[in-house]
Length: 207
Image (tube, rainbow, N blue to C red; front, side, top):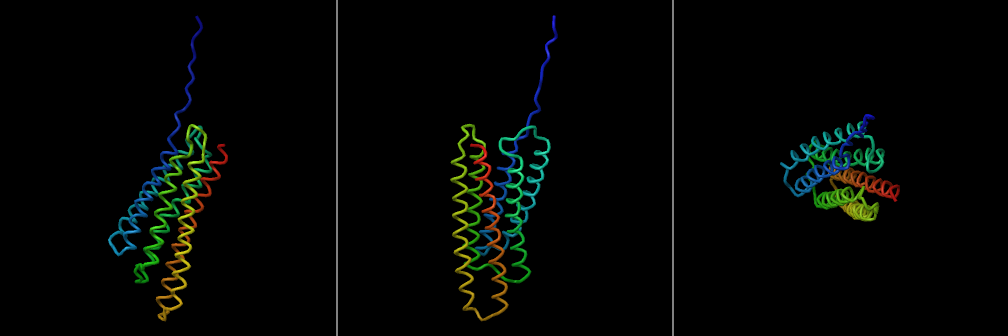
């Protein structure tokens, strides 16, 4: 009687689940950024804690990508999205640190930009939830990515309005400090947009 041979494929880690977990921690950190920008100085500790936890999740995802036999979307896309998402929370931590070093507390422009950043990250998290869907339709993911980009376009307007208002400020130290803070927040918005664009790229490849 012939011997029956069984073949077992390796169980792939849930890489999309890990990316979604990174997004969830990043939302925590960006929500704390909104609280900080609204005047709660103690929220800076929560931003730093979220940045540390998000970094650990990013490292876990990279280890999973090395071990995975197949991934629900391109491994390179997952790597890039995770890396740029990490830049978002890193940028938030660095902006708070610089604000503290310059003794330049947040103002209404910073508060407005922080709110648009967390909205953008929430939309990215929604896009991640839709990526790799069994129906193969990436439209829901790209719609969420578009909403993330829209929030960052609004951030750009807040940035320009804030920079314009600085023309009326006579204190050179304040002008230079606030200009640097505004620019840092604008760069975080660019990182959010880069993640959204990668969502589009990944979704188009899956069609």
